[in-house]
Image (cartoon, rainbow, N blue to C red; front, side):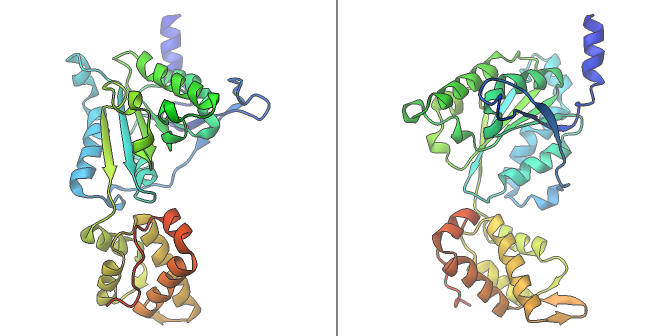
Length: 305
């Protein structure tokens, strides 16, 4: 029977897929599972992850390289369970990086948890053990794992207790990687974020520097005609902007350029004037709400050279 269970787990249709457990409205809060949902992430390459090289290398060492050397590490008595905390301002690329890892970690089952699945932490971890090697992703962990003194609802306390128990209860040979994300690392319960064996490595996603912003403009302007000098102007105007903001900034400038029917050799031509209009719409008409949603730490001067 043990061999049959092992074969069934290895040949499961869920293995090496991206999954989430679903609960319907009637069973929500009562540990009822209504089904398993398969997810498909758009393919993301390493070149599309615009981070400082040291940050990207740290992520790879704790994920891809850890999985690559799993057999050697396990034979040497190293623990195979691992927890990472990805933190940074909104729009800095945490979710984008997870999508890349979901494809890059070949052979791993990815289990997604969100606010709707918080009652199913125990069941999600059981599935992760059965389908290991597994990657368990809990985005916006601060929604459940705020410091206990700040919790105002029993639901949050119960969910946090379950999460801590599951991370503690994993055997050392369990090939399970937890990736938790947050925009607010300061409010996370210390017993989760500061205790070795639960979170082994915290990785900050910084706002992009000049070099990274230049790479972002190059990435998101593919297919457009933009004068290199105009790109350099936008790099200087977007100090303090997140990757999400720059992506939307280029998209909006392209839309404004399309409205003016500006084209050059079958490519849409986007000028400094179009970028200025786009920046004005995003920041001065959108105001602080837009800056917070897309990640911009300051109010820029659109008239800057």
